[in-house]
Image (tube, rainbow over all chains, first blue to last red; front, side):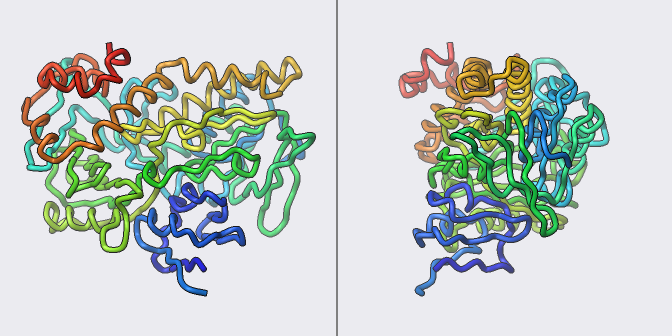
Length: 57
Length: 398
């Protein structure tokens, strides 16, 4: 599953723009991960600060 | 907030604000929906814009201009600097804005023309009827409301969720997202009227690092790198920290922001039935510079103008809104994006040695017109072999 390190996240939306599934949504200062997430990790790679991590279920 | 508007605009950045201002000025009812609690914040921008580009849409005002730029500098991987001067002596070429105040000013102007504004209000889904977008469901402090509209303008920035919900693929390819970080640094030694662009695979892989002055000793110091070059231990912030430690060790960071900038081609189509997409949401950022403010204002204004005509005619189908798409592609904005996309694709493949050689070809270049096109022409003059390598561009840069 995709883990959001909220203390690192700058809630910028960079991850949202690269998510093919449209599973991410930035709700003001809160990044929501939807059920469509395929754990592909593209967002984690794009994140400018390393706030996202795909971890084993 | 009313239950129906002629035009509903998702997003209160420059694209949305100008769209609302244009629509309201023509007497249409318009509403901007902004999910953030404040217009203009948090800033996710390096804040640079050309002088003429700004003037086209708003009168420059010290309240939203941090600094005036007179020249630019390109710094090669080996540290060689090429200064770009304007031929107009002492001439201003651009501004570094204060987006917190700039965005607020634009929304203010839209409101003054009669547009409604709803902040901390989030569009959570489109309203669809027979496959046509006809409004949005919006959320405000735990309650939700359906707002119908003849045309919805999606101006929701890099995230571009609204269009995605409408079935349009707005996903940015990983290699074409500039993963970005920026510090507003103060107490640093800079040329306060020069924007600096640092290139190199060690400095900013497939992107660049910028120093955009905001005052005598204050600047936006930021970086964008390609998403494919980003990863643990080598993210945008890591590169930025390395640069600031080396160049501004005593600088103080008074603001820290991150973001994503798309440098892909624009969406294949920027309209659908009842829907128009503008600015970053339409992926109309300049792929070479990453600049998006002007392109957002241009497409926002144009979208509103086409929407006004379509609403008057009583037809807001995709076909009726299509002139917006065709017009911006054929305008200078569209042509510049197409050309600069090719230049970007060429530049990101260059080795540091090659970049060094190009920048070493002149220590100072005087540009008649302060644009990327003039710069490329000058660089080709000094590096004639470039034109062979830029074969695909030959027609585009005549």
